[in-house]
Each structure stands twice: as structure tokens, then as C-alpha cells.
Length: 532
Image (spheres, rainbow, N blue to C red):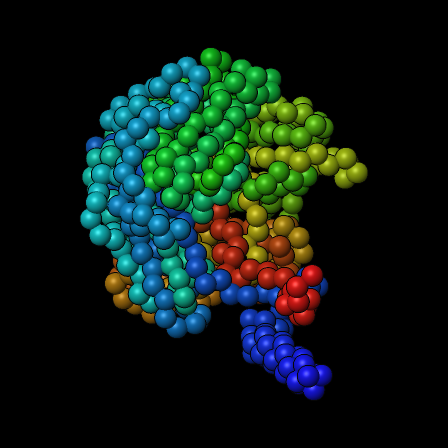
């Protein structure tokens, strides 16, 4: 009996050992994706396998047209697939179908629902007008694909998704050109990922302005979102705007003036999702002076850089928020061809805690493209800030406006998906030591060969250049900027158009395309296989 029990026990132990060996064998056959990673200790840098972005509903009225350009840089793994699909058509970044929604928000913002000419009420979620297939399909890296939005002011928001070899660096540009209306001119943005928090600086509820925050929920669950406005005296109306619920697959444009009883010329806006995730974008229209999308600002920081100031701007207005508990005393600097300098008459700016400060800078660039830097006058007392800059161009009796924002650096690589011959200007600034960058123009959407150029940037200096034109390019092309040495490098692309006498333009910052992510190392622990 004892021998039989002993044999059974031995067999059980051998079986358990075999299970442990099998488990560890599987683990050993699955090493980290990139063992030679350059990430912090305890992490591995791995290539992303899926990238998603959301383009908001375009503000094109009945006279405008909207184009999408999607691109993935060449040089990655083979395979993969990319699509641009109307959000309400059912293709959302999560992969789950998004039901059509026609209900109203759970909480009407203070001030009631404001109607926009040619669009529905400000707080009413709307499904996209199109229910067809994909607007565009990206099948290979190295050349962009293009698509056009349906006409009219009910064009849907668009979900863009790429996987496999097309995921690393996948970038989508949305550009609208309108000939009449309060938002006439050119409006553009790099379509962003959904998230839980966004900052915008430079909005307004003053007379003549029609600024909308556009919330898109591409997920399959409702999202509850707070929209908080900050002005010169802090949170407007004590932050009483409340929250709205954005149903799955819905797009909700909210007129900012309906969120407050207090008109304000200079605002910062914080969008925070309490539950779920949304894509947030903010469009500003100034009657008679053009309109554009405000880029989402980088997270609040003690020192911030706003890249992409055009050399031919006619005026610039700076808007800064100190969202923390401390006042911010800031040194104002511009980057010229040879380094940083302080603009006369605008040496410093004081921003009270929780409040917005604004300053008219005039034609501050003096004919040279530039970047603006805000840094603490006392490095030992650095209060975090968020910054935005409105810039105006005038040409041939017409004008257009664009908005810039404090931005993260290029990092390893960044892309502007849409560029055209004679219409694109890169503005590159080395915010630290001297830098060397590589600029690559892709093949065109309808053919052509890539072109490459290396550019040297002096420490603290800005260089503006037309990206090298691809040989034989047909259709728009993408421009990729890679940091080879030095830096950090801040960058933006200025895109101009012929609408409105030639003043039409839009500016998009170039930020790290996040082709890789940091993955923590996993340690083998046999205890997880043994019951307690």
C-alpha cells in the first residue's frame, strides 16, 4: 500500500514538474520584442501594432471642401491595413460597432443649446451623414492616400485605424478650405487619438467669435465629459458648466458661448472625461477674419515652446493659463536664425494661479519664421503653464487666422501628412543644443519618388524651408522629420492656399509619432502556478 501511494505521489510530482517545465518553456520561447531596447531600466521598447486617430466633423459650411490625407512612413515591417471610416458607419478604433445616436445630451450646458448656422444645436449629439464603406484605404507604406468628405455641413467625424506594419507612424491630416462664411479660409489639424484630458488656449466667447469644442466618442460605451473654461478671473461661472454625456459613435459640437454667462475675449479650455474616452478638438471662427482648429496644447509644464510662427504674420496674440496653485512669472523669448532673443517690450509675462493672461505681440517675428518659448524667470520657482498663440496673415486685401499651441518636440520622428508644391513650409527650431535633422518627402498620392534633405540647426535657432519636392510627384505628399543628433527639435508645418486672395493658411505642429512604446519586463514567478 505504501509503495503504491509512494508511486502515485512520485507520479504526481513528476506531472507537476512537467507542467512547470512546460509553462517555463513557453515563457522562454517568447522573449521581449526588442531585447536591445534603449528605454529606462526595467522596460523594453516595442514597435506599436495598432494606431488609431479621430478626425472631428469638418466646419466647411456649404461652400467648403474637406480633404483627408493618410500616411505611414516607409521602412517598417511588411503587411498591415489602414482605413478611414465615418464614425457613425460602425468602424470605431476599438473595433466595436458604434450605434447611431439621435438623442440629446444628459446635461444641457449652462446657457442652453446654441444653434450654429447650417448645423444642429450645440449640445445635440449627431451621427455622421455617410453610411457607406471606407472613405479611403491605405495598403502600403511610403505613399499617402487621400479622400474627400461629403459636401455640406453634416459631414461625419472620421475614425482612422492602421495595424500591423502600417501602424508605426500612421498620421492623418484633415484640411478644409471655405470661400465664404465666418470660418472662411483654411482650417487644418492632425487628427488625434481619443483620450481623457485635453488643453486648449486661445479660444474666445467675445462678439464676432463662434468657437466650438467638438467631442467625438469612437468607443462602444458612453463617455461623461467635463468642459471647463478659464478666463482672466479664473474658472468662468465657478466652473458651473457641468458635464455632458457623449453616446457611443456620436459627435457633439458645443458652442462655447452656451457654457457661460460671462463673455470673455481670451479663454483656455480643459476637456476632461470622467468616464470613457473621447477625441476632443476646438474650432475657432472670427467673423471677417477667418478661422481654424486650435491644436491641443502639450501638458502643463514650467517651460513650454510654441513652434511654427510664420515670418509674414501681421499680428500675434499670446494666451497663457497657469492651471496650478502657483503664479507663473515667465520670460518671453523668440527663436531667430541664430538663437534665442527677447522681443523688445515683451520681456516678461505674469500669470496668476488658475487664471489666464494675454498679450498682443504685434508683428513680432519681423520677417523671420520663429518659435516662442516661455520659461520661468526664476528656475527655482517654475509653475506649470499652458500656452496658445493666435497669428494673422494679411495679403491682397484679405486675411486669415491660425492658432498655435505649446507643443512637445519631434523626438525620433514626426510627420505632416499633407504637403503640396509651393504651399508647404517647414519651421524647425532646436530648443537646446545644435541639431541635425533629416527631412524626407514621400512619393505623391498618385506617384513619384521620395526626396531627402539633411538640415543643420544652430543652438536655439530656427530654420524655415520648403521641404524637398519629390521627383515626379502627383498629388499631395507627406513630409517626415527625424532628429539625427542634438536638439530637442520643435517643428511645425505651414500650409498655404489660394482662397481669399492668398492669405489662407493653417499651421500644424509636428510631434513624435510614437511608433514605439515602453513595455515593462516580466519576471518568471513559479508561485503563480502553485495554490496558496
